[in-house]
Length: 239
Image 1 (cartoon, rainbow, N blue to C red):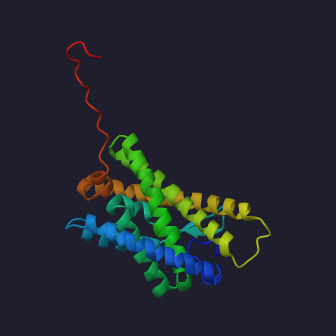
Image 2: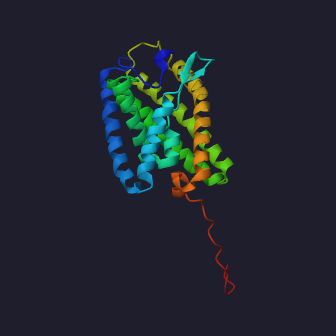
Image 3: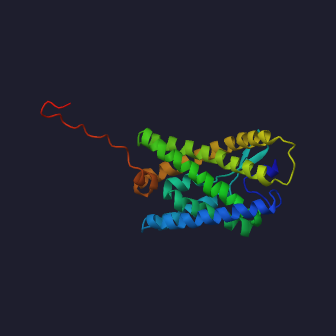
């Protein structure tokens, strides 16, 4: 079960596949920098630093998954997407992953492209797509925001875990004997439980911030509620 951690260690995926995903991650992060610069202002810039520091700190705290014999921690993609947006959010999570790999050895340095792809890119993207959908459907109350945060965080963790399954299928160093579906099911099941913990942390944090300073929640500012199209008055007998 240790090899199923989201922080992929060196040697689990072969070199060529790791190099391809490193190039993809670098290109995607460069794009995030370009798009994120449009959003940065006097309010978002310091918030991005706080979000990265918070994710880094909370990732140090593991909660046990007793049914699977492993532990999990916050990935932070949904939290970052809600508070600072998808582009800056992906950069925040990527910075945390780089520091953890270089300073704490959490995930192999050679596997950084894989880990960034899964947790910073796939996780954040999946979360923000759900956030954009749910905030247009649910009422913009604390309950609605909490449900949005919980669901998007849970789904983002599962999506990130399936990114690892794809990468293992492309270049896993251990033969699974054709049991890729078993790996996908195990990863989804374990990370569904981890996602519940992530969802609770994300919902609590975002609702607390929104209660005190709703203007600091990027999703509430950027995703405007859909406005109904006004009816055109009928004149002159025309229909």
